[in-house]
Length: 343
Image (cartoon, rainbow, N blue to C red; front, side, top):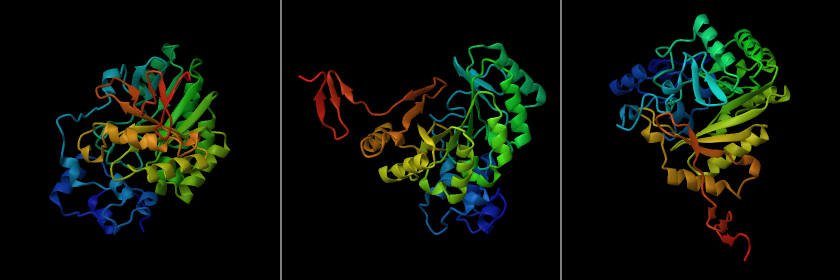
């Protein structure tokens, strides 16, 4: 099995993964959208299973060439809310800070797929980072900074610590949240030095871990998560609802229970965004709501993520889970209606 990240169709094929490197259509996909499969992810893929949910997330598919008119290069409207390079300021009390646009792996459903990868947007220059941090420092209403990208935990511990120190110097920033696939996709890089760098922030430092299938919570991933949790880093989950990956109650239940058992609080279950060439991943809102409703009552309250949609065009997230109140009646998890107050 491979010991290095696979970045071309030929490398994927030579590693025994189910990819036709001679297919001109697949080459067109790989030319347009970045490809990277780490050794940790490659080991999870079942080459003989055409419906393997891990392969579906990471291996390029000719279906990515099918782009709908409603799909957008910037589906959640990052650029419309970017006052300076590297900052997205969509909500009053928090901003996104995007220091890099590269990742250890490239998800085939990524909503920033037009921006990330070796051919995507470059990392912030020193002067751009200065300007981004100056923007944060100038607005006392910014309470939280969400460091994303790309995947910010691909940075070295030294660079993470340098960024943490600069954010610590901004007195009104109370929370820093890091969004990452690294604990799952490259768990060996979660080291004591990286954890120490994250913990150096003078306020609360959260890590939101992205995983979509319970098989991604490998012993190695769980060891990386344990290193973070044992150091006192609060952990949240992020999951994208994906057709053919986790669009059934059993898989979602196993994933959410796996998160909680690892001390990761389920946070968001995202409706897949309208990124180009991703229609084959999206379930309908009705299907998603039914799945979330099926989790209620079946699983502990600790295991309930919030089902959200990033409204296309940059209008922000809205919770889209099932409704339980109708007039003066409340529906229980078995579907029975009850008057409230009781008659």
